[in-house]
Length: 131
Image (cartoon, rainbow, N blue to C red; front, side, top):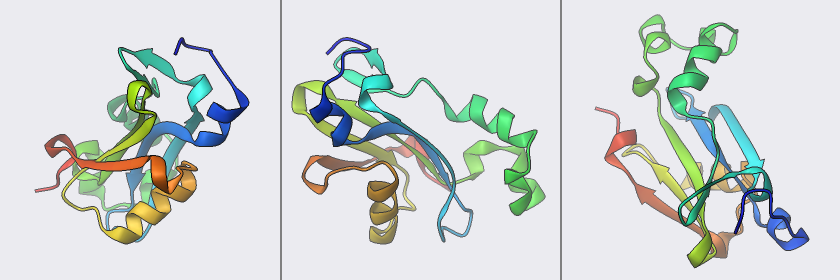
């Protein structure tokens, strides 16, 4: 699939992007969900061009992070987070997450990113683990 390639079927499939959970894991703090057709090609993948580090810098300038303890506001790595990517060759969405994920979070992420249950795979990635 080339960047910008779009079909009505692909647009219905779901979105790629990144997300941050609230520190108490009660819900999403912030997310960016883009249709697959608006994602960026990265090898056999379609990904969102946003990354947690740079988004966190933008969020620090706004009001969203004020809901967090001051210590958490300083470092995005202390906040539960993850990424949704689309693996073209497998026609599958892969949600990368840390050791904090529970079934209720899967439901939230599936809904926000419009991920069809049959096309969503969840993979733990130590990069997103909380200590």
